[in-house]
Length: 322
Ligand code: DP6
Image (cartoon, rainbow, N blue to C red; front, side):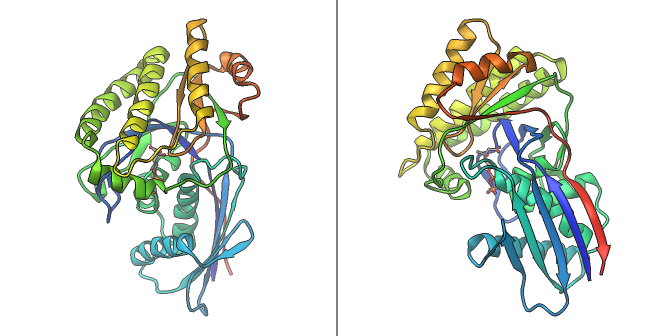
């Protein structure tokens, strides 16, 4: 039976995806913009097994039988549907994100799984189809299929909601890994609570759609200052929105807030740097490559740091028919 291995990298959104229009198809309320990183790859092997009575997920060497295994199996159902197959598979996935990081592992995870599973089941998908497929596993994974900077179009339906590359200036990110602890609530559940309970949600949707258009324009124009400003404002709006849920959710820790303050002070001193954060306490600083040393010096002692540059597309490494 056939086996395929793929590698994908996490991405960090400059304009965030927060809220779904359709949770069945995983269609977002707004489009988003991200940079795929060149660090922390996920490597995933999918091996079809005609004798198996179910799918098996092995994550960093350990077999899982909980929520993640169920989510992977539901994703494989979509692939089997496309391929007209009823054969189960074993999925072996190795994540190199340090456990302390808690970074977008579902983005690299489902991008690698989309590429490996589609190849193992004999599907020949182009980049757009892979991005749409990865989106079904995790929205942000639609962008990890794309190298460098990607815009994920919200779309109107399954066919029109996919990510594609966008030209961007030369940029780097400094990832500040603040805490090891598990998220208090998954982004999927927190998004749902936001849509149901935050009075600010409609304003978030309309302002993010505007920010996305402006950010894509800034990207194409090479306007780093405008792109950076939009990035930080959008991140803080998302966190304000999340805190406005009932019951409230707060992902940023005191150290995260301290990092935002230090980045603002750095800007005052003339260094072009802007902070963003996803659904957790880690903070990512967008900057120019020649300002990376100034950023790491400013954050010294606050968190473990890693430097990232725009990374490659999700890619098939090997495919074999056993
Ligand atoms: C804060 O892609 O993990 O990182 O589609 O439910 O799997 P699901 O959500 P997910 O959410 C990512 C949220 C975010 C913002 C972003 O990456 O755009």
